[in-house]
Length: 164
Image (cartoon, one colour):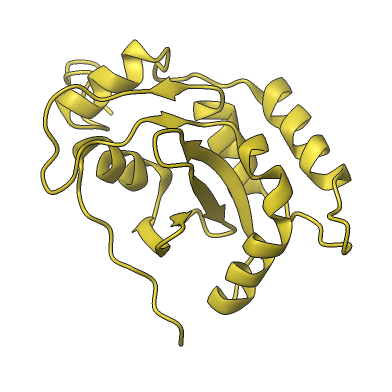
C-alpha cells in the first residue's frame, strides 16, 4: 500500500467508518485477548464432549477485530446492515453445531461473534471463510473476514449454504 493512498482502500467508506467508530484502526492487534479467547474455547467441552477447534485464521481475526461492537449507519443494499459483536465466546456453547458445520464443509469452524439483534452466530473456518448461523439456516458471508464485514455492514444478502 502506498502512503499517498486514501486510508479507505481496504474497506468501502461506509464500512471503514463503521469499523473506526467501533474502535478499529489499521494495525489493531490484540494478541493477548485473542489468546485468552483461544484458551477459553480450547478448555471448554460440551456435556457430550464436543470441543472447539482453534486455528490461526480465527486467532488472527480475533486479534484484529475481537471485542468490537459495530453498527453501520445508513440503509443496506438488500438487507438492513447487521449489528455485530465480535466476541467468540458468544459461540462457547455451540461446539457441536460448529463441529457439524465443519464436517459438512470439510474443514474446521470456530466462533467469531454474533449479530446481537438476531442472535445469529458468526463463525470462521480454517481457511478464513466466514459464515453466519441462525434459526433459518447457515449462510456464507465471504472468503475473508474483510469480505464478511463488508457484506454484513453493507446489507448484502448472503447465499445460503446447501447440504451436499
